[in-house]
Length: 356
Image (tube, rainbow, N blue to C red):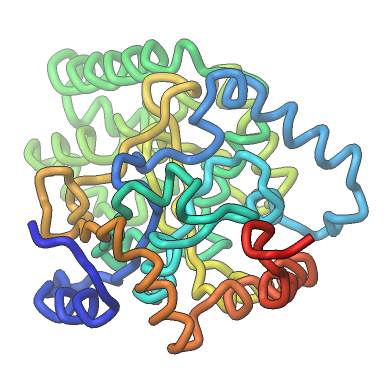
């Protein structure tokens, strides 16, 4: 695969990569191609085991930085902004922003002395199905955000899932094999919510419709009820409903294992300048293991087309070209402290060339 050696190379390559239908395109750039898609909270076992303590400490020591109406997700975004480890991973909808981060010079470091700048960079292209891109107020975003505030490591998460699935299978077997549809239906009539989409006369006389009703509606509902009765899940529900009072007290365990793309509110100058969005990560078999990004998003390691390698020796040149296009640290980091670094760097004389 040819390496990217200029902004022109980058744009030409992008034009050859077709976007998947019914998807939204996002980008992520990092200065070392060996980097994995791992949120900062998962890069150290001590951090992920104390995720809830990190958040509690930040809220305790800096209460004025968080508004009373901030949602759990908004708190995570603010923590991410200030460099705290979180289960968020930054994305951008602007390809040139991603290219900048793949060639970025770290503060107070020169290219000749920085090992990271001697590595090839990478820009990853995500084509995320539209239905998997959520707004901040999505229930699924609320569920994954609440995980960060939970003090359990979910060590028995797989066991909870196994018990739930076994229960659902047993429920189906009993309902279909040991009780007639008419007898079963009489016991279900009191559940009016389930009757909305089914005609009583059809279900009571048609075995096929009854079987479909049991397998696709009643059994999954009863299984969810069991799953949501585990102590860890009840506490998770408490965290969610403290944040979103109208949240229905039902969690699908599959949602805990997802990675979701979230459209960020443009209420932060840095997010606005960087055209920022986020991935929020769920859990694997337990909380200390991250959920995996779906291969369907086009970012599989085997799929070289969606991973553009940036030539290490060309980073300084590309950074200069981006600056001429208005893409620089000054434009992407509008905060006062970032502006100070940029302005100071414009006038500071390198020690090696200065005379005493």
